[in-house]
Length: 275
Image 1: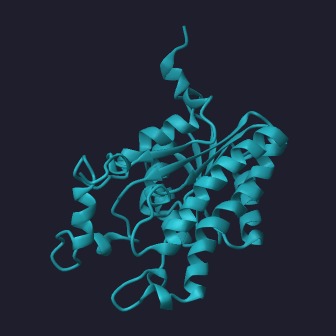
Image 2: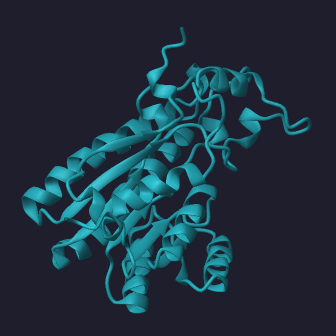
C-alpha cells in the first residue's frame, strides 16, 4: 500500500516563483522551502525577494533571490539561467506575477468609455504575457528534462467577471484558458510527465486590493468589501495560509493525475448565487 505521507514529499525539488516577493507567493515560497524544496524567489523588486529569502535561510531553508521583469524575454532568460546556475535544474515554475492597475479600473471618475487603452493593455500584458513568457522559457528547460510542473495563478474573476476590473477579469480568464491549452500542448508534444495547473484564489487581502476592500482610515470593510463577504459562504477573506495545502498537493506526486485543472480556493464564493 502506498505511504500517503510520501506522496506529498517535495524535498529536493527546485521551484522558481515569479512574483515571489508578493503577499501570496512569499507565503508559498516559505512553505515550500520549509518542506525541503530549493526555492528561487523571482521578483521585479529584488529587495522584496531578498527579504523572503532571508526569512527562508534564517529558518534553515535553501533559496536565492533573482530580479526579473516577466514582460522582457531577455530578463526571463537571465532569471532562468540564474536558477540553473544556482540549483542545476528546474522542477517547478509558479507564475505568481500579475495584478491590476487603478487606471484600468472603472470608477465614478473613470467610465468604461474612457478607460485608456494603454492601461488596459498593461494589465493584459502583465497577466497574460507575464505568464506565457516564463512558461516558454522555463517550460523549454522542462521539455528538455522531459519532466516538470507548472502552476499558474488565475483568479475567481476568471469564473465570474468582477465589476470595475474589466481588464483584470478578462486577463485572468485568459490565464485559465492558457493553462488548459498548455497542459495539452506539453503532453502531446514533449512529455506526459510535464503537468500544468492553476489556482483560482478568491478574495485575499493583498497590497493590490487592500484599500479597495478595507477603509484605509478605519480599517472597516468598504461597500465592495461588504458585498464580497456577503457573497462568500465562509464569511471571511482568505488567508495566504489557505492556499498552501493545495499548492503542496499540486506540486507533489499526490496529484500526479491532475492536469489542466483550475482549482478554486474561495470560501465558497463561486458556489453561491446570492440567494
